[in-house]
Amino acid sequence: MQGLHLIVYDIETARAALVDRGVEVSEVFHDEGGIFHHAGNEGQVTGPDPEHRDYSSFASFSDPDGNGWVLQEVKTRAPGR
Image (cartoon, rainbow, N blue to C red; front, side, top):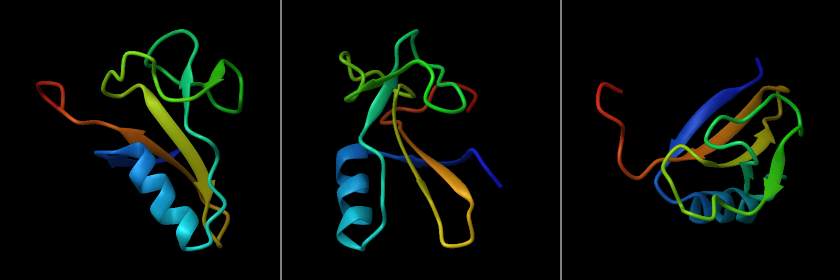
C-alpha cells in the first residue's frame, strides 16, 4: 500500500520519535501550491508550511513491509472531518 496517512499533532516531534527508533523518514515538507501534496516528490518544498496551516506539512517513510506512509500535521480538524 502507498499513500497511507498518519495524522499527527506535531510533525517535528513525530518525525523525531520515528528517527530515534531507527526509521528513515524524509525531511518535513510542504506543497508549493498549498495544502494538497502530490504523489512522488513533485511540488515538494523542504520545511513545514510557512504559515503552519493544518493539513499542510508532511513527512514520509516506508515500513519494513514496503508500505508507504505520509505523516500529516493537523492541530485542529476541519469541520466534518
